[in-house]
Image 1 (cartoon, rainbow, N blue to C red):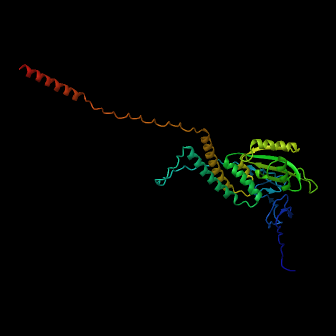
Image 2 (image 1 turned 30 degrees about the vertical axis):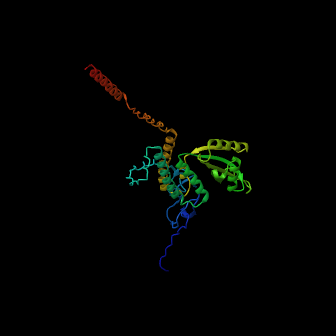
Image 3 (image 1 turned 180 degrees about the vertical axis):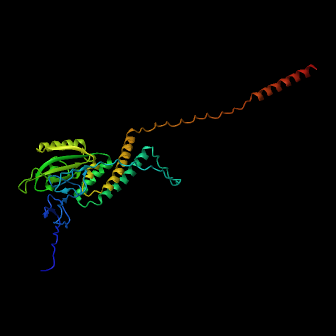
Length: 337
């Protein structure tokens, strides 16, 4: 006989949970750190952040929704929560700085209330928004995703909604599907950006014939209503059924993976300020009426020519006559004497 002995507890590995004292592989894309004790109570795996449980499978939340990590699998179905964007904070008050002294040859800048001042203010706000946009795009490494984010950001700065045209096409690859979309719309590819994802409802057996859900984003700044209507008519003539919607560019940016939420909130404020200043300047330019032109002052009257002085000889003539009369009187008196 010997000393008493004991059994060692079985520890489950990575992505395994305890079910009826047995290590069981996690299901439906759920995960689990190693270390569960098989001799203890049953445990569960869990879904990652922004995933929900549906029939013991981890399913990604829809765009604009969120969910904390840790929903148990196996376990009851769970739901994501819709993200409600907080209203942007009000812009900081503008403190007018004292202008530097002007040189004698310089003219003062136009006041902010003038049309020139409003245009200059809009340009300055747009530059600030563009700097914020570039910081937002700096962390996006994929070129196509960055191009899409830039188009959306530029639309937000301009204060317009993006045009979103969705259609279903078959092609050898996503790039080919996007090329077909622009070709069938008779649009240059530089006028928009394209997303193509394999259709989950129409997968084909042949690699050369894959169904894609294709989405083309366009900005009204580059594609007007007339051009968009012609593009939709071209798609219909090609036998392609398409839907066209107007979408908020900020909300579309929130749906792009890799976008930093705090940077996006900051950019949204700068873009809104720039769009408001640009709209005010455009309205001022349209409605501004120049003041009437004052007529030139009348020319001064022409001065009359100076009078011509004519010598008056009448007094000399009268003196001569008087002298003759006196002489005649003197002669008469002398004769009479």
